[in-house]
Length: 198
Image 1 (tube, rainbow, N blue to C red):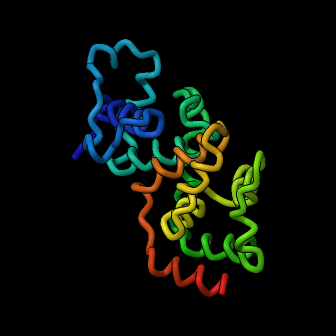
Image 2 (cartoon, one colour):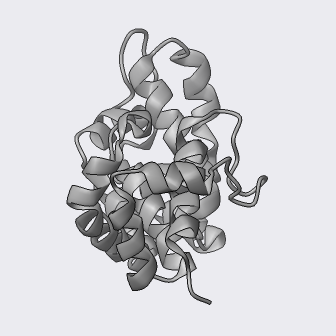
C-alpha cells in the first residue's frame, strides 16, 4: 500500500513522541499522533516527507526514524534538519547493525565483559559504571546495552544509583524506549553471554 507524505509525517511525529515523551508509547497508541493536514502543509520541510513516501514502504519509514532517534546522543534535541542531512547514513549503519545483531553482541561482550564482568557494572558513588563509559565512547552499541538489559535488567539498579544523573537518564530512557523495537533471539544471546562470562 502506498504511503502518503502525510502518513510519513505522522510516523515521524509518533516515533519522535515515543523517544522524547515519557508517557507516549508508540505500540500502545498504535503510532497515532495529533497531526493535522493543515499543519503539515504549512511545513517548509514538507518536500522531505514527500520524497520519503515515494522511496520507502511503511515499515522502512518506521525503521528509518527509529534508526535516527537512537543514533543521536539525546533524542529530545534531534531536529528534522539533522535527519534530512544525515538520516540515510544513520539508517544504513543501523541496518548493518541489525543484520549482524547477534554477532555484534557476541563480539562486544567478548571484548568488554570476559574476565571483568562484575566490574563493568559496578556503580561507584559519583562515577559512571564502565559499561556506560564504553557506550558513551561509542565502543559498545546501544543494541548491546539493550540486549544486556533484557538479559540482566541492570537499568533498574542504575536508575536508583544514578537517579539525578542527566547523562544516565538520557541513556536509560533511550534503552527503555528502544527495547520494544528490537527483535532479538533472547535464548541465543543468553547462551552467548553465559559462555563468555562463565
